[in-house]
Image 1 (cartoon, rainbow over the protein chains, first blue to last red):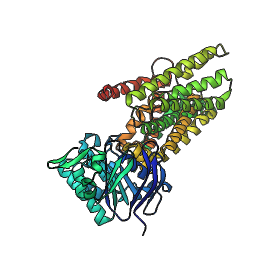
Image 2 (cartoon, each protein chain N blue to C red):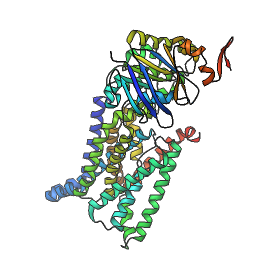
Image 3 (cartoon, rainbow over the protein chains, first blue to last red):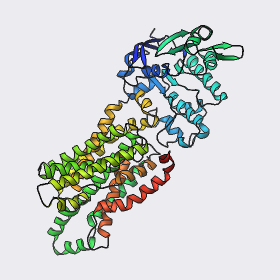
Image 4 (spheres, rainbow over the protein chains, first blue to last red):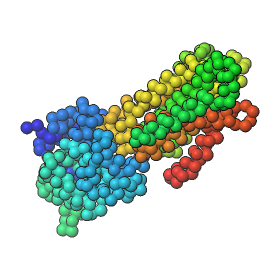
Length: 233
Length: 322
């Protein structure tokens, strides 16, 4: 069977050392790691941003050979920045990922954007804008979602709803998700697999239990799990 | 943008175009009664090139203004404020007065090269996604440098009349141009107006940031070069024939984006129509001015555009002060 994602020798000069990442069937993979560890760089490599070296195959296809319309259905990338350069309407931003004239109703409903879909994005809160941009990424129903800090700026309820939505997409709809997260508890609770990034390479790759209780976090972050939660090691 | 809006825009442009050809109609009617052949000559040799130039130049300014603003993700990045028109003027002056190229081709090639040089310099100086202030300062510096070099080039020119010759042209003028000259400006302008909208989806997706646009499969390096080349082509050729005309490239895209619900790329074609209509309207104002002789059109667009620009800056002052 064709794997959902296979990346080999993925590298970005000075930011990401040659890296291999494989996802057989749809999974929710969370990238964790210290600031500057290479989470965003790995996402850039997978989304083919900044001319990375190495090869990426998503459902057997090379995104580099596809034009914008075909690539939209293969992968979507949510940048860490929630800035939108022009004062567009929220619904128009969501539709930017779709062929002209298509209505992004499903994505609007999934992130409950209806209440502010007609408002201008520069008049929304950062959390609301995050939901609009997440809906934009979901709208074309891509095979692979690459999300940089998807839970940032969201309130606690929406963080949980988002992670539940991502799990639903993975397990019901067969969409692969790679998301960079800083919240280790959120990652541990929802991810099928954690990938620890440190120094521009994958330092560890495994289940949440294996990764969070092993020696890796202490080595990478200098933290450990204590009686009252995470504490400095 | 709805079909009705498109029709309305096209109708307004067509009406202004007809007005431009027929105004002042009283003299034209009298001439038509007296000597039909002469009246036809006035229409075809004088009025038509003037109206065509206004339509094409305004259209090129509107389209390239919208495209450059979308590319820099910046509503103030217009051909005049980025120094593109000044660069084109310098290129034309260098070609005509120092290198001695005669005729429209030399002027047009010089001006297109000058406009291209100014835009590339702007990209290098201000960066690809410049802050408003950085972009304006870089544009100001390029415009000032190009203006000073233009003056030096005219002072060094072998012809003692260079300054006098160039004055009216530098202020921007559509008067006394031939149909051939109109074609030299109009064909490149039309090419730029018709080709720039092809990049609308890529330019619209730039609203999400360069990373998102690149992940969608848009090749940004190639996009930048193409938009800069097409803008330089349209604006440069028009500056070569009619001199530098300001503010249309700033104002037209701002109006156009109101019609496209803020989409910067989709605004390119409407901005061309609005730009053409605005420049014809400004040309009609130059003829109506009660001062005995006609005003240079660049003065009229500056008089109308500068207050608009000031109000824009006043509205943005907080983001500029940041």
